[in-house]
Image 1 (cartoon, protein in one colour):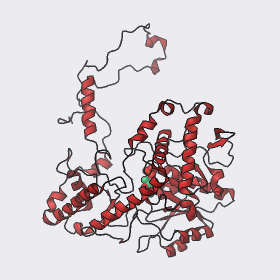
Image 2 (cartoon, helix red, strand yellow):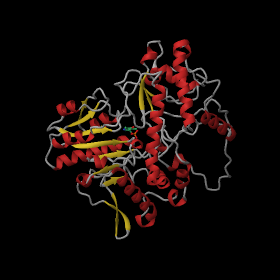
Image 3 (cartoon, helix red, strand yellow):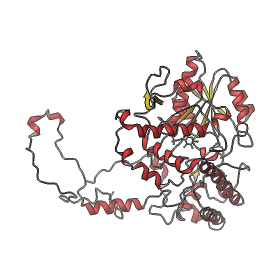
Image 4 (cartoon, helix red, strand yellow):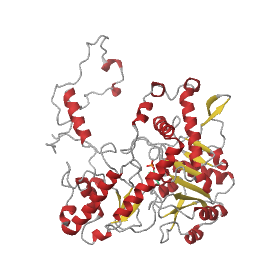
Length: 487
Ligand SMILES: *Cc1c(COP(=O)(O)O)cnc(C)c1O
């Protein structure tokens, strides 16, 4: 169907129109049909749009204006840490010494880049309290999988083949049970108690000789700090299991406490969240893993080391789980994280956690009069509200999220975590001003009032966006991913 108000680039095409001018051909023409095996030759030109350079510019500029990002507005998407990405990171990532090197260059010729990676590893060891760090994993979920594969290798090296279960609280991030399954374990759920943290009695019930590990998201997806971590660590270690810390949301604790000090054996971090790698839209991430001494032999190889004053990749790691990512991780994202850590300094990183937690608590307390707060406790970097009061008026959480679009906000995460009815998971992040937080609070309260006085306006939202309410079920079940020209 032709899109009349915003034609696709294909629909703008006019035969013969071009956006390039090439010099005359100055090499002899070759008759491809006779020179090469016929089957390699494409007989018809690909069906590309024929448009002028100006049309291309206007098309993509217009498209980009329809985009929404942290640089355009408030983005309180719970668990995703959509905070500001300082532009100095981008400047540093564009230094020629970094941007013009090749990943396969001889280590001797890229000592500066390797030193940067090595220093980043050292900083992350300090921040997490772990003994060794690998920068290889490309995202949080891959870090989880890498960590679990190391735990598996550890148990197998001890002849412990019966540890097939990974315990995952019901308040864990969704990737945790998925990673456990992909790593070949059975994910076993442990329940939360009425305070919203792991129920120790239930943990004692599920832990046993078949426990490979407990995977803990902390703060959990309710934004709550697991206050009984030391007890949990003891229960799991006593049973011979290992402790995995999902540190994707380190912005809640950084500078105040460390997974290593709590007794964890493996931790992963999301450098694209807490450490300001730009993310969203599936861009590159970085999910380094940190390990205790006991698990260090199993780290992915190569391991970046410093020896005789030189930075080197050590491949001589017989117990390694192997390589998990080509080259040595996503260099550009690691470089941005390094820049961030160096510009913030130790005190600055501590302030990040302070403000992230302060902003979330401020907002939570301002909103609890209008929205149900299912777990009434101090939160960390994020909090979860329930829209069940509004649902009684016929306005669902989905409607509230859509109505926020009318006011120019990216909605919070909705319907997650699963243990809260009509959940709204809000993460303001530390980079937002009080004015921005107040603006969002006022809007949320205004929407709650609309739900009482004028529910249709919320139920039918959005009204002010380019696209109105979309059929998300059809979009998910029958996505149209390819342009097929009309004939
Ligand atoms: C974002 C997140 C993950 C997954 O990270 P990806 O980089 O998206 O794979 C895992 N755990 C928690 C707690 C997260 O917030």
